[in-house]
Length: 149
Image 1 (cartoon, one colour):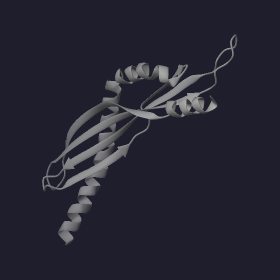
Image 2 (tube, helix red, strand yellow):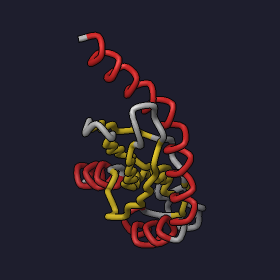
Image 3 (cartoon, one colour):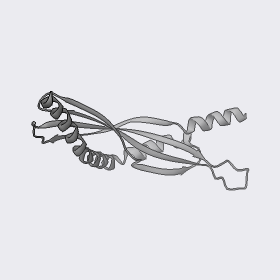
Image 4 (cartoon, one colour):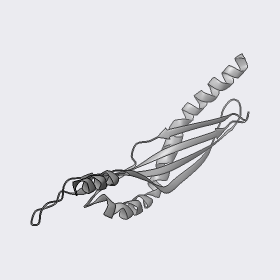
């Protein structure tokens, strides 16, 4: 019985990609020409079972802490045909807690994250804006090496 409870808690603590993604396209100006950039943010939700079930007549401390994280994939194609790909991990954009078992709350948590699509899109745009300087530096390094060679 203890083994089943432990296995259940381990499963409840795992993350799941919910099939939600947000996209953003941009064009970055570079001295070698325009760079078409696509960003795709894939959302994953992690669950952590916290607390314990209490015997009858006592308040239970059992709850599910969860966080939605976004992994951003950048695909840029320069005017020269150079392709630059980068994966960017970002901090949890949405998090919360629900009383009870994580297994029982998964569907509600997924709906809550899906309702935050606009927030996820804004977060993706911030990540894209922060990535522009890195992208320009990568392009400068690549095209500088090509000129030197």
